[in-house]
Length: 427
Image 1: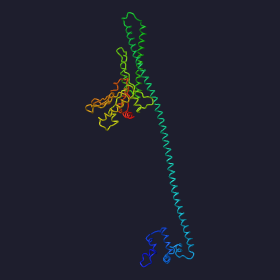
Image 2: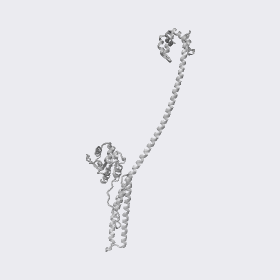
Image 3: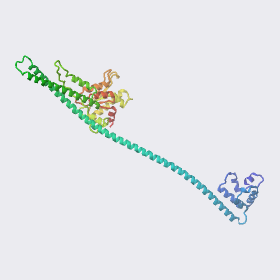
Image 4: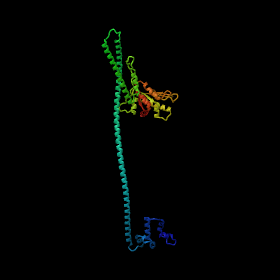
C-alpha cells in the first residue's frame, strides 16, 4: 500500500520512515520488520489506512498476528504476545527440525567419509604388510647372497692355495724329472759301453739283462714323471683359467715344453729346459672386494709393482668432452697424484697413430709416457708390455677395455677398471 501511495500523485504519501524501505524487494530483514511495526504503533492514521486496505486482500494472505496488530481490539496486547510466542515457538521448532535434518546429513556424510578413510586405512595396511614382506624377502635374499659370497671367497682362497701348492709340486716334479733323465742318460751310456764287443772284461749276460731292465724301468719312471708334470700343468691351466688369471692358451705352451722331450734317434727323450717362473696375480687381503677403493689402494701399494695405464680409456672415463691434449694432461696429473700417494712405478700408454707427431708431455719422475707406433693400438702395446716385465714384480693394468683385461690376465697381471681408479683418486 505504501508503494502504491508513493506512486500515486494525489494519494497521501507514506510515513517518512517507510520511504527508504520502499526501494527494497524480496523478504524483509528483521530490522525492516521492526521499523514497520514501530510506524504502525506510532501512526494510527497510517495503521487505519492499512487496515482499510486489508479489504482488498485475500484473508488467506494475512495471518492472525498481522490482523490483530492492525485491528487492536481490547486486550489485544496479551493475545498478540501469545500469538507471537506461539509463532516463535513454531519457528524454533522448524529451525530445530531443519537443524536436525542438516545434522543428519552431516552425520551421514561424515559416516561415509569415515568408511572411505577406514577402507583407505585397511588398503594402506595391506600395502604396508606387502612392502614389509617384500623387504624381508629382499633382506633374506641379501643374507643368503652374502653367505654364498663368503663361501665362494673361501673356496676361491682354497683354490688359490691348492693352485700354488700344485705349481710348487709341478716345479719339484720337473726338477726331479730332469735329474732322473740325466741319470737315465748316464745309465744308458754306461749300459752301451758294457754291452760293446770291445770290452775285455765285464759282467755276464745275466748281469747285462738285469742292468738293461733297470735302465728300462728308469726310462718308464721318467716317462711317468713327465706325464704327471703334464697333468699338473693342465690342472694348473684349467684352475688359472677359471680364476681369470692365466692364459687360456697355456696348454699350447705346455705342449711346446713337452715337445722338448721328443724322442731322439735312440728312442730316448731329452730333458725339458728350465722354464721362467710364471707371474702370479696379487692376492687381495681377506675382506677386500675387487673393484673397491680399498682393493685398488692395496694393488697400487704392492712393493715393486708396475702400473700400466690405458691412457685414453682412462681419459674417456673421466672427461670425454675435453680436447685430446687436455685429456692427456689431466691423465698425467691424476697419475702423478697416484704416484705421490703410493710410490708405484706408473707407465701410461696413449694411441700414437692419430696424433701425428708425438706431443711433448710433461711428466714427473715415476711416470713414463708412451705412444703406440703408427698402425699399432695402445691395447696391443699394453698387452705386450706385461710379459716383458720381470715375473717377480707385480703388474697392475688399468683399463676398462675387455680385450686388454683378458689379454693381460694371461700373463698373471691384476686388472683395475678405469672407473675404479677414478673413484680411488677422489677418496
